[in-house]
Length: 476
Ligand code: ADP
Image 1: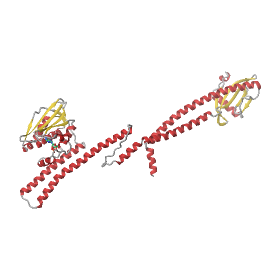
Image 2 (image 1 turned 90 degrees about the horizontal axis):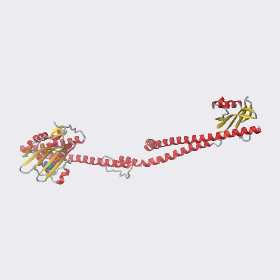
Image 3 (image 1 turned 180 degrees about the horizontal axis):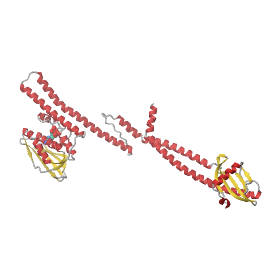
Image 4 (image 1 turned 60 degrees about the vertical axis):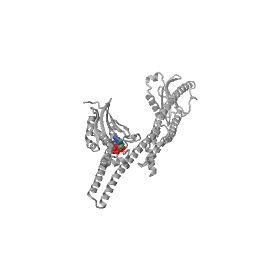
């Protein structure tokens, strides 16, 4: 059964089909080539035989005219007949029956030996199988005049007495078959060698599981298969990065959820452990509510990112004014700013048109302003929002006079779950849980709009986030 399936696999393999096609084309070429050679050779033999026959005919007639008896030029394999005009047979060798004569005369007619050519003494030639079916004879018939008598003579000789054409035929057949056999064998060997890397790729692909993407083919060379293997390795590397990122994401998400769940569990257990006063219960409920808010916020952000990764977050881009978005974000976060004693300032807000999805860009502005409020510092805390144009680039800037961010953190700010100071961020989650996802969402949305986010920060002085987008070409 296994053997059978191996053969089935072999017959379906590319190398088998390649060799089959190759052999077929080779056979076709050899056939045409052999036909050409055989035809040429046959024509040559025919011409030569005809010449020999014509000379022999003349020699025989000449000899007969001289001696009136069988000519020594006639070979035993030749046939010869001399007939006078009345149809009387004057000489005959090898033509036995009257049917033979009728047959020969029929051939003369077939060869279009009309009256005219007969009278004009033109010889007529033809070939036919003679008695022994496997031997072809070449015939000549010609009017003759011997010793004052007129008539005609027929002479027939074996067409190819040395079997040149049949030998050539078998040589060509055998040579062609041998060539095809050697070429097919060699082709199969070559195809097998060429396809070996494919086998290696197949084995490697089979051994890769989603938990182990470390496997690489590392195929050396510059041919197509090495290129394929390199592409395959590149794809594996990208997949590995994506899988690792996904795994990290899930681990971080679980970790983020575990902390508030543990807090809720601890607080509730402690409250239930013994009788407590009303203010104590109130404090515990407050903690539970705050942790619940943190988790809601986290789950909401996780869902947003998951939808973005899955390509389900649709952006409905329309021309809109960034300054409207900035004002709306300021309005939304006014109460938060008040509670944090941060003054919200609307800086210069000229009309700044971009093509964008209103809801998503509002989320970008809100996240940045919310962060600025959260991380604003000093006695006089303020956050300023501005918009403007740099040539064809529209920008929205959110500046605060907060603690700033040290340069080593700047490259990681937009990574998921990245927080400069994890402990402090988590502490400040009493009202606004910092989960480290806000800037990743901002970055994703701005990139999806074909723009970029830039950060400029001075530790101790403040931070400026700038969203840069292509300005809309349509201006109302
Ligand atoms: P979080 O929810 O923790 O604010 P973000 O992704 O929005 O998460 O921000 C990532 C980190 O970047 C924050 O934890 C904070 O350390 C830092 N950060 C963001 N905005 C500011 C800002 N305006 N000033 C100082 N640090 C900031």
